Length: 352
Image 1 (tube, rainbow, N blue to C red):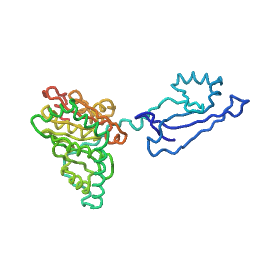
Image 2 (image 1 turned 30 degrees about the vertical axis):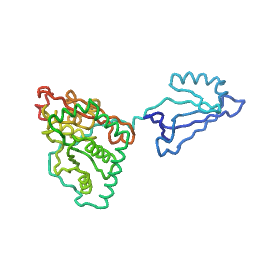
Image 3 (image 1 turned 90 degrees about the vertical axis):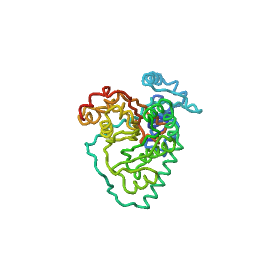
Image 4 (image 1 turned 135 degrees about the vertical axis):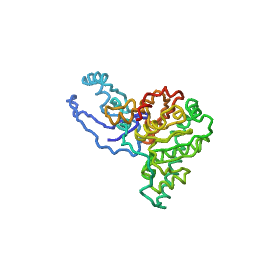
């Protein structure tokens, strides 16, 4: 069983079945041989076509009366038949089956509410060898992102008039907006957090209006914190639980955070003069609205997110490479319309 690319983003399993006549006297009797457990290619691009195929001589294929029935059934099942090779063999290509598993949208993550509190890493000592290795990993990650089609597409979107106009509204009369990164995860242990951090660092290098970067995640070690600081970031000493008030223009960079953190951020800024000073990069609010489940805990965690949808301009980013799907799938830019507090949903008076 292997995987291959039928077109840019469609993958499906390889199963080859070869049918050969057992004898000329018994044209309706066939010997079936199947190939199973093929070695999976190391790269998804190693194969160029994914199909389940039958190999039958062209003449026998066309003359056998059962083939007529097969072709009729194939028409209704979505099968196609094409001449696959120069030696007269025919290939029957089964209909594409989308692999939903890899791109299945996750259920909203929900954690119990916690209060803001001072924070220190459990790992208090800086390991110089780990530090050197992690710096090298970050250098590789930044270079890979910077040279990727994904990042060039990401930049094109940020520079587009639709998105750049939104950033100008957030900036107002200010010249820079600070960036706050919550829930970055372990940049030492996982590639996705390194990709996410790389994008944030590259944005600061690219745009003069991106100011200082503040970072927090309770899983960060002292070694990771030291590397973040070497990259120009400030590691927060307080676990704010994403309750930072946007008293000045702020970009909250929060890819794949728990729903509670988005809700906390909205609650802390649930007035138009603050929401209008925020830009949020994180899980799609539209996704939450589409996937809300009849579970009290999930409904409670996402109700403010869903309520904010009517005042939100959302711009989904494009994932043009599977390499960056785990780090950025279902991510969007979110901007909040300026207006009157009376335009906010009544949740503003609920204290929740």
